[in-house]
Length: 330
Image (cartoon, rainbow, N blue to C red):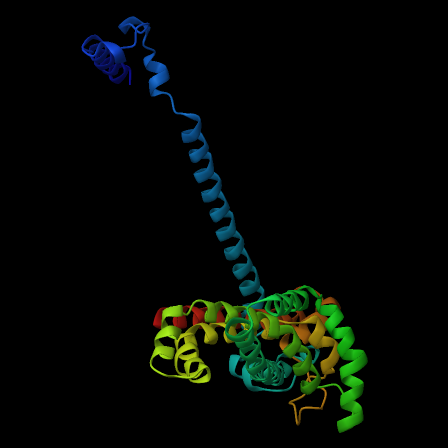
């Protein structure tokens, strides 16, 4: 290191001594006044960049450790149902008999799996047309104050807590279903209507971004060929944004599949294979939130609930995989 500084000192002294243009020569600078240590010292900007890189890598490492810890913890407890308690995986996935306190032969999550998928798919099917319509209005027909007003409404819906949606469903939706269809009012239909309102802002916001990402040149080219506005929307805008719309729908489904509190308040929490849309049922999340506090750590009922959590985690990873797959194909 000292040799490098010495070489640098010689280069600087030679450069100063060989200056031949009088008006740019440093009058007060002599070879002996050159501080080589200062020249080789890292600048303030360089130190800031190093600190920024270090903090960024530290944050990435901490996030990676956190993700691995969560997956490992949930996996360890969730797999204990099949390794320690000897529950058959096929029986767990396809049986609808759920009573872990009675033994390993009564641990079946089939009814909850079916209900979770039914609620998720129905909510996405209902929300998607509304989301696309609102997004088209905001991007293709109205670009002024009305569009900003709708955007504010969507942001307001996102900010409402889940318990408020659940309370509204319990006091408004459930009595309405009871009056119209009979029964208790609890069930898949009530949960679907609540989730429809909850996932609508997510799908709408992502769909708006999808439509805005379509180049304006495509719209102008379609209009130049004589296409009407609706023809341009159907044949150009929707097709160009198709992959992004599918991504928005999958994100909405992931939001609906993982919702717990609001669904628990309106679905009835009865672990039964759903016979219709207005019979009490239970999802994976509703069973977790209602029963986790009533079990002892390490017992079969507790391990069975951890298995439900592991299944939810696997479904979340599956939704993320679908999003990445669609993104690559697009």
